[in-house]
Length: 417
Ligand code: GLV
Ligand code: MN
Ligand code: MN
View (cartoon, rainbow, N blue to C red):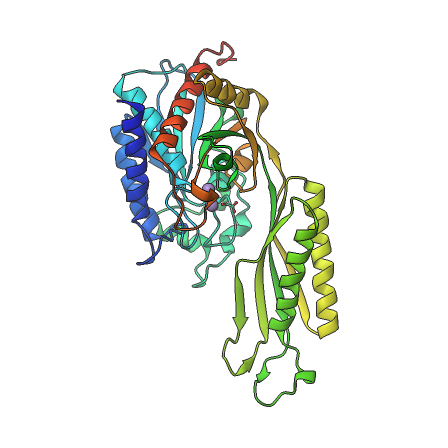
């Protein structure tokens, strides 16, 4: 099979997966949804056909395993996620799973076994859309999922535990501390992902090697004022929760603009009770803050809390500041990253290293094993948007690089240490 044919298959499969959505007119695939079950069924058939054994774990992650040339060999983990954001593109996540699958498929077609096993992981939740809690799938696999998250509720008040059960899984809190692998049985975790930014395109490069994954905070910020009649309460007597929230939103933007490298986003707003003739009583915002340097991110997060308190004091509105998640910046592992770089150079493509502003499951896996990531150019750097677009030519390069990376890994003589 040529790389070009494999690349076309990868793109066709991403298109197919992109047709499974919870919403008729846009791609939205949340954790433990029917659409997620449908893509799992599809991916399972492709994994079987590529010579893998397939397992769906207790929360809905898929694991396709391609055995090594000999018993007792270590395992290389490849993969990405199959869940999406709301109104998503087709490549954020599925591309990494489909490229990993295609690499195994190519080995299987040539009847080649490597001196290590390969597991292709397809995570049931990385984005955290349903429970506002990122990296669920990889946390479960690595035994680091906090049992308290099982009680989180989604927009329909369904707890995570209920969602897992109705998906056919088992949210047994006891099993949450058990990692699927021991570190010494692993060679590492390598994920291919679209860049989701404009750097590769600006440099006219098909792929790039990731140096580190930015740290991030996710928070809920709630403003409680006083609901009232839109026609009768004079402006001077109002405690409008939305006006307080709006002032905060613009303060977030101003602060983020003033510090190089800081990105801060409010992507969800809920206004209660939510009627055109009622003064907003409670407004809840999501807040996402990121920076490559942990210290800067922490300072920004603390300063934003102070600013929110100042706004609330001035407007006599109550503030609830709830930190949902905190992830530090994670550097990719030197040795694995060097192999990716060597693969790119041996294939005569220019080398570019760049950090990832987006979060990825490597953050979770870094607690268990070495991580590396390869970025693929995406058109206009657009992502988390249905306009996400990639080319067959770039996928072809990514496949070559990943295959070469695995061949280089095969020649390492410390594999069985
Ligand atoms: C995942 O896409 C994230 O960075 O939020
Ligand atoms: Mn994403
Ligand atoms: Mn992603």
